[in-house]
Image 1 (cartoon, rainbow, N blue to C red):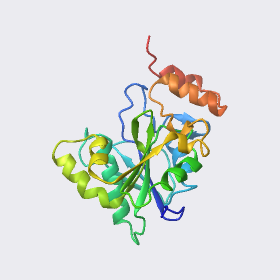
Image 2 (cartoon, helix red, strand yellow):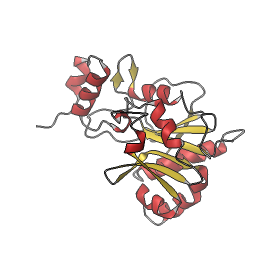
Image 3 (cartoon, helix red, strand yellow):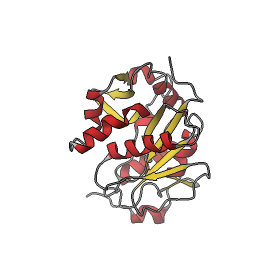
Image 4 (cartoon, one colour):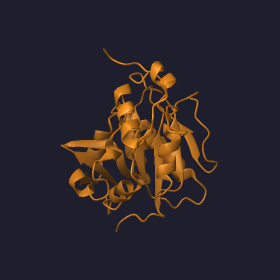
Length: 222
């Protein structure tokens, strides 16, 4: 049975250190909104509620009132900690009925709602559904059930912080990018922005002019 639009929640991880970009990717402008605002707006078309998982003392842009916000318990634990905290926030949400959530990072401004739904439709009776591209599993283009929280806790306690360990321990549906081309022909939803060059390329793809002042603050490699 696939996850319906109404039963799918969303989690956005925005607590990364953005070292290669030179400034917070969550606050980086993308048109008339920040990257985090844009990703949340896109996700709201197919997921509800949405949780933003931030780092301790991290500044965030203005966000929708209904958004849930939580943070990592311990810094430096990587995305698995963020996934865990996002799922935990959903489980604690009053009237919790959302058994699964699509998880993404905040640096995918070209994310497509149809892509999110297509991945969710592949969950079936699995504990997780993850997009696989050329053999690589994308832990931040994946759907997770809240029931995997105890497994994540065990992995973190054992010092196993890579999400790939989770996929090896729970029933995981592997979603080939070939099966997602109808929803997102150019797979823009997987274009996460790590370097300033990535950011400028994404702006061009979206037909948005970069802000010269912002560009001057980015860290370009030689």
